[in-house]
Figure (tube, rainbow, N blue to C red):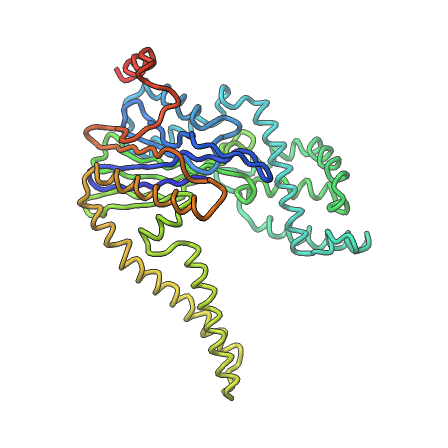
Length: 423
């Protein structure tokens, strides 16, 4: 887990990130407080990128991939728009034989196929629990599989391909279905829970699921690009999710973006672990939002029950229709009221903050998030040194705070190499 915050106004964009990273899985996860999450993407110092969620792309650390891209980018002039850097990075990563050899991508595809198969099996088990119920007869479990498989097939058939995947990717994986099916059959034979699945049909469903709903079961990395293109006067950011290669296709999607303009106000946005930051910026977090949603819905239903108990005849169709209309209106109203009292005034203040004040605010928000995590959770998933970077149109990328795994003053050759990179 991680915690990051981005803010921008007409003067600059500021990013702050903690250094916590979790490796391994339960019951023995390992926590480190030395991860780098903010990177200078361009040799020209006009774009920063921060990462969260998965620290690797297809078994390659993002730190290595991004720095290799920057080395290549050093040969080029600044790109016109920030979005051009997104496209340039995607083009660099796509099928890169040095970072992602064909053999590695083939092995990844096999693992992704198995994840897809498990996802399909779990969906069938949810829809028809008899399929995985060991107390049922073989006939009952096979029948349950058949019903579930038919529904999943129908749902997948109605889906479009997950952009940028196409029918070509689908056919390329189907061409490998015989080998995939053979390995899947061995896996199923050693998994009693799923013994009654039809492996041939499961293979085809898993392949279709892999090209139509891969984001349901493949991990991703969030990448936030922030800064300026050569033609841009004010800063902007673009948030994407990168899932890695599926065969020869690099799977990614755009999530969010915002650009400061002459008319657009300042903006602040947290990423990953952000409950305390959300409370500061919005007046509430997802936990509070969920509590209010559930309790208010219960209260609406209690009111109807009390009215019926008092002798009023209220058909369920009428009460359900009223609640279905009024409850979302209530949720929308209280959220917007909180934004009016918290988020929008904060944005107005951000418009006038200096660069140093923005940096201090960003760091303070992460300190607040780390403090809450430390006293309420044993996971240690937020913490460590806080890195803060600022990008301005005139000065370019500058570090306000930055950790090193080495002492720069003891490494003069490194400093000389860094200087030569920018000459």
